[in-house]
Length: 119
Image 1: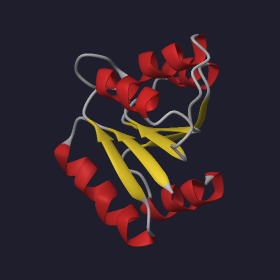
Image 2 (image 1 turned 60 degrees about the horizontal axis):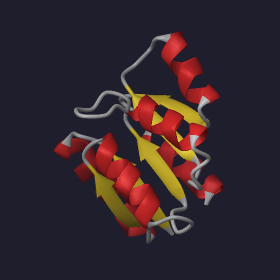
Image 3 (image 1 turned 180 degrees about the vertical axis):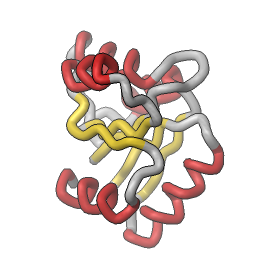
């Protein structure tokens, strides 16, 4: 199973590695939205889930979701993990195809459970 992690924080990416690698997931990492779009295109049809932050440099996570949705790019289910509490942003994400919206700090057991259900 392959997960695309879209997160600008090195610490957060390390935490994801510690959570998912022992469960047998292969992690692909992107530090910003532009890298995420490249990975989504490169691994087209070969990603099982995408875990994405909202606030990142160069291109934010919501814009990535909106581009994927608008351009009908084949992509895996998207889980948004963010500090954003604004319901307008959450609605934007859900309208763009986000399946689950978690607030940081995320409960790792719940995140793992959702990923396992989606894969």
